[in-house]
Length: 629
Ligand code: COA
Ligand code: AMP
Image 1: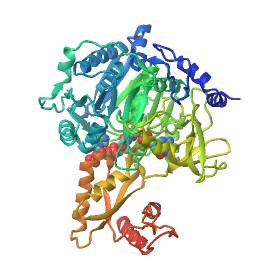
Image 2: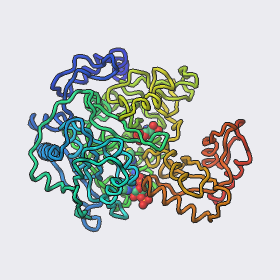
Image 3: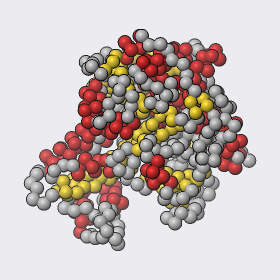
């Protein structure tokens, strides 16, 4: 039996043995005696500190001089000259211990929440690890969200402190964060008792109010804080992600299972060990950033690259190659959309000739389906293994992958390869029976769920069960559909719910619909994800006007687009909305989104037998044809 098959089989038949072995990669204040408790929680009798494992122990073991973090900003510095710095493990530890003390001086203690609203600066890692150090629970909010989204997270997480920066940098503008935070605090009911800690960036320092405190000033007088031991089952963070409704779901991550799974994954999946340079081009606001920019590389004693920039336009399509060559990156992890962006601007990859990218051994892609053209382009240009892997915020690490450090397997384009040890992946049909090989169905994970996966949703255990566990008893429903072929390779085809994936960013069509429905002229509406050659999918809206309303289509469109940007944020990339006479519905009133998607993507759709009024589909075809022309 190969190393992969052996590991996968053992992880399911002897989870205690498998994961207690993996747990030896982590240092515990009290080592767990069992891996999987009867409650389904991992390492329930273990006690540890995640920050200790990410920083202190490397320094203690004599690696304080090794580089922990390289920050490379393509956008800071004058005229896009760029700016860089690197911090050793010792320096990171000093900064984190001091900021942990600073948080404590603002009243943050074990179990308290801290909302972190920071762009791609190294202080984001400092703030996250400082929370972990004192047992506080961080909740990072992505910078592309609007005040209303931030407010919803403030009210749900009830933070003791908010840590924010004065601004973020986008290629075409400086995004002032301070007004966003102020506006969110005006909208939210909750007030953080410890106020807002503001990191002043030179590009646009903020004027501080009475409840704000300057990061540097706070840190200057702070006493460094030591690591606080926490139960393995205590929460490390809450990360909000889009569900099918407008209300985001607070995915909870615990300390013990997370540390063990991530540490194990760095060697087994990514083939990265101490001292290797690992670059995940994502954002700390997403799960990919939490896991593979911050925690996993540092748990492994590797060097992590924090890149503030885009794949193109900052300043050109050679940006990624430059970062790889300057920092001698061994493995890069990003979303396929980033490669589509590079391919669109520089189809022959001429920029590659300007850089020595020989350090790069593997390219990992995830976050959305990897289309075969992009896969082939990357393979042809880079001539290294290009590895698709599949995961989601809820799992926190890959469900399916080609485990490069354990046993590299042949690649089948279109498939993220095989289930990672710990994940018992099954494809189920409508009746909950296992689908035969090659037959598409709902991809589910049979319980027990592996370490690192969410144990619940913040403050909403009922929603956790209802969203994931109730449809197929004994299984976690991923929300993706797909199939498993005869060789055991998994193919992920797309979501079965109203979640869409825009440039690797997960969005809920329900939340966009809620904004459209709030416009006084709109009677009803639907939003679907339609194919986009760069971003994979983009949202497209359809609205039906209230009778008697007189408004010209262009004005309405502009107002709706502006409303989505204002209420959800620029990241929604909402630009297309059409006025139609009616929405296709079943006789029981359910909107036929699948038919709408078919028309949008192919120009036509089969008329479903359940449709109430087939003529509505003609109106939709007309609207979309007009758009294409
Ligand atoms: N703060 C504020 N605004 C942000 C933001 C942030 N952190 N991130 C994105 N935005 C804004 C952008 O400026 C843009 O605004 P605009 O409408 O005024 O132009 C909007 O949100 C949409 O951003 P994005 O989806 O990133 O589109 P883009 O056209 O700017 O860039 C890509 C397209 C493909 C280059 C870009 O999405 C990318 O680099 N993706 C990489 C993949 C990735 O990071 N995935 C995350 C999960 S792995
Ligand atoms: P997120 O929670 O933002 O990471 O988004 C998770 C969703 O992105 C998954 O449920 C999938 O729909 C999609 N996704 C992520 N990675 C892949 C992949 N490699 N192939 C296909 N879809 C993916």
